[in-house]
Image (cartoon, rainbow, N blue to C red; front, side):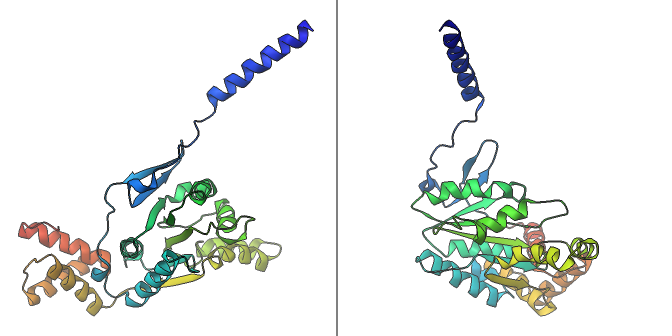
Length: 281
């Protein structure tokens, strides 16, 4: 009997020690505190964002078709109608992440949750908290891609469509990537050449992007589109630059950068505003 009591006391002390070492449970987030949050791990928490960094959707030029598609998809979701997860892929600096944030601004009643690429394995835990909320959420991962030996894409596949629970009805997942299939081409080609059944190996990789019902491609812009972006920004912020000089300087700027894109246009406008002593408010 005495031995049993000693064992019971020892077990109680071990239980208390494990409880002290265990991470504190995530407090119920107050999603009414902000329109946007960043999901972070270690410990798990939703950090509110006081002011989301974005530009109005009217300033995003040269991407009219994908902008309209993404806006309509998001607004259907906000009304409780069926909507698709979306993958925005393609050329760098062409407004993929800017479009997601701009579309969110046009969709009242939906909260924006950003999850970082390195935390994608914790997405199931994030969605478990969102599932219990009465709010509707747009979960956004910028610059999503997977490299060799990275197995976290398998958990993402299950969360998006294939798991028992599936994606929560109050959650939509948007991701941006420079890669259409989220995997580097050399990785896929290498696995095709070394696998026992190469077609099955490649199919497993490609099936991740298939989980996104809406694919929106972004391509390098023409010179006319680039100058339209520059003029639109200059007019919106009332920079007062003369049209001919503005175009000349903008083209010279793009040549020094070796690229034409929305990002390059915005960087030129920031430089121009600084030289003119004006702010971009």
